[in-house]
Structure formats: C-alpha cells, structure tokens
Image 1 (tube, rainbow, N blue to C red):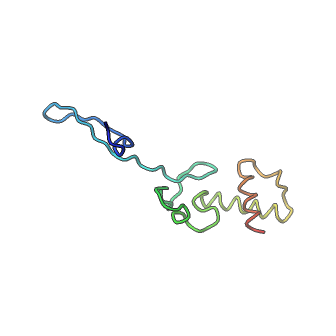
Image 2: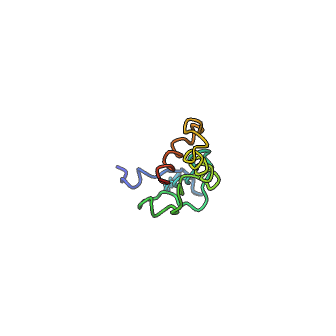
Length: 107
C-alpha cells in the first residue's frame, strides 16, 4: 500500500534509458493570492502555506484581499456613503460587501 505522504502528491511517469517506466512524485504548488474583485494576482503576498494568515499578509486595510487600485476604490466609495454623497444601494454589487466592512472600520 502507498504511504500517506505519497498519496497526496502528484505523479508523473517517465522512461529510463534502460526502457523501464518509473514514476516521480512531487508536491503541488500553492495557488497565488488573487484580487477578490477582478482576480488579478496580488504582488508581495505569500501563498497560504500553513501558519497564521495574519502573518502572511501586509497590515494595510484589505491587504492580501484587494489590489491597491481596488482598495482605493472601495475606501473612496465608503467615504462617499459616510458623507451622504452616495447611498449604499447605489454602490456596485460586486464591492458592496467590502464597502460595508470598510464603513464598519471607519466608524
């Protein structure tokens, strides 16, 4: 029976110069962190490979979740809602939940 450590690994078959088929097992890579709104890859954020998530992301608001461009957009929308320039119903549905959490952090 295969050991548990090998069962979790991906395998690839290759042929040796002597004509025998062997298999090579290797670890899978962790996915890169992606932006929550448009899915682009976040730079400077480590893959979530064990350990606490708070130690692996920067300490800025929405860091490790949003890119800087989208983070600015969400915070600007939250400020507009707080100042009464815009209603929460007028905010785009894709970012409304993030705007609501930003409002909770502002207050």
